[in-house]
Image (tube, rainbow over all chains, first blue to last red; front, side, top):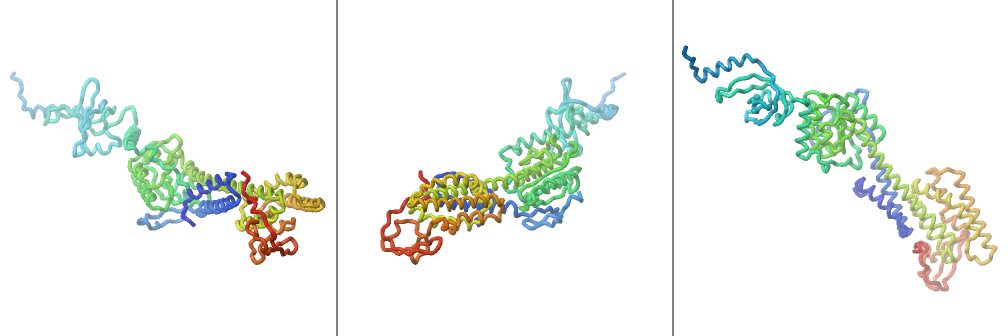
Length: 78
Length: 451
């Protein structure tokens, strides 16, 4: 899959829709456009929802590029 | 009696001794001519309409001022009077300065705000928008207190967010250092897409850390967008002026992020829905036009085209949008179609055969209508709804698939066949072998829209 960012994929999807609105587009091309639209919308949706929600509290800074020490944080402690 | 004769030094010393009688004095006036020596000592004049008093403030006192001594500043100062022997001039050794008509903090705030504005740190063109996909959030606030609770409560509305809390003190001496450090670290870490710098409500003194220059500079230098949410709607701290986006409260800061994500999903769904609707409509219109198509030749090619399209649409795992679009259209169309079917202009020769075909189509239409009425559209229902397009159904309706004898691909264009070629035509039941006697040129594809 190209490394099209989320924003590019979304604008690309909206372009596909605009082209589908053009009636001079033949049915064959409409099908290709629709297939493209399906792929793009699936990619956008997965990027929006692939991160699972979690809240971590930083325990200590780490050197550049390394992952810092963290622990789950819940508001009961707040 | 002869007048007493003083030496210069003696006289000044005597004057200074008498000045001690004043003790500490409070003097009101306007600051002007401020000079800062290398040593950090401040020299300025205090004046009003009736006089000028030279003042000196040693660095140790001056450095504790939270605002800058500036010309034109109306102040109340506390100090001790003395005559400076070197110049023989009266001066006030100042140990405290209080701005008049404006609180000390407010003055410091105005001064820093003016300074940073002058450097263009608040310029609108510096402000970056919220990222398109703010999935990882850096949170700079206290790990206890209302702010973090409010933020996390809002964030639960979007269950696909990573939050990294960098806990800091949000008031008191040294808090500004922690906040600036957190902003710098998270900004550089590459672990988050956007930063939320928030704290709950409080007095000007409570919020003061967010008015400190180092915090402002850290936010301004952040490589990723920063949303500030400090205090209540009315509170505007320097951090708010320099942040990319200013939210009125911590809750609103979190809401901005969630709203962004929800908005993006809506955009995706709407586009997908629209694509499904547009394409569904096109497919449906083409199918109906084929039903009403003129001439047997057009019909002969019908199943092949439909078969091809049907396969590609099936392979597509059509999304709910396409299906919903198709069924909605079918609802609207069925009534129209049913009535049109009776006037179907197909020249099938014997009228009896025409009734037969029309009757069979009516049955098909009725079957689809009851199918749609009986079942609500669920994802599992896709196969059945698309079955209406499937080749088997089409063959049932009296169409056929013709191809060359040893080549399975359906023939689409009459122009491609030569007299004498052997053809194989598949009907609903069984196959017919035939040989081409002649053919007319290829008809324009039924799928090109009439312009």
